[in-house]
Length: 330
Image (cartoon, rainbow, N blue to C red; front, side):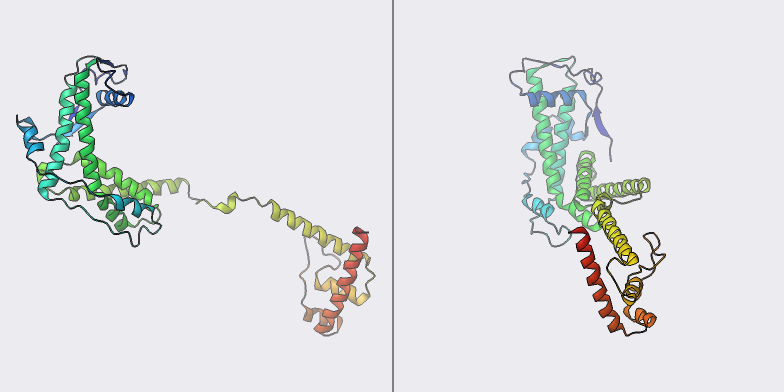
């Protein structure tokens, strides 16, 4: 790739910190947006990929008048793909614009010639005051350069999607991956030298894949710094669960008191069944409860069948419920 021509050495560009540019005889012709764009062009680096064709007297005629006309691509399919939830699956049918080598070379020559003209016009600005005619000419060539840049990028949007689907980096969101690829595509448009005879897709694919690789490395480095993934459960309050547990423990303590003091007038076998069945015996408390027994295990302790244990348990629970109602609802 031949070195790009960079113009940042004009007297105005050397004073990048000074943004008070006087637009002589042009303030009425330029909108505030155009004035801001002109200041950005004059105070920031502006480069292009130079080609010997640009130095010819008939360069403009050769590049714009007799060059092949390239139709603008249809990008209506792109938004349908990006808005689809199944971006990796079947995508809407699209019409790809395939450029010939001559058409692609013509587009890049036109794009870089527009940038070359802006660089040459910037050299004519010798002070902080700029002539209105010169300002309009700079803006005109810059606008044409952005138009060609957008056309080239839109023509190759499918290339970014193809590379993103081929990469399949599951830890990165597909739309974020495509966004990184689009930025790499624009950088590749700015650096590509069409005079070498290679297809732009060959150069852009490598640039896009390198951008994906850098994104993966950046994400891996971030995960090393913050190894714990976000868990929504950690952000949810457990106040209700803890409150419910406290209420249940208080109720268990109250039942333990009623059974221990025999406030429900339980018989000895009923009291024994409840203590063994629900771990409410002597020595059992909130912090160190005994393990509750099954109906069959309690039946072996008291010497009856498990069905009889169930009947005794239900009768005892009914007495405990009535005792609670009399004490708290009376």
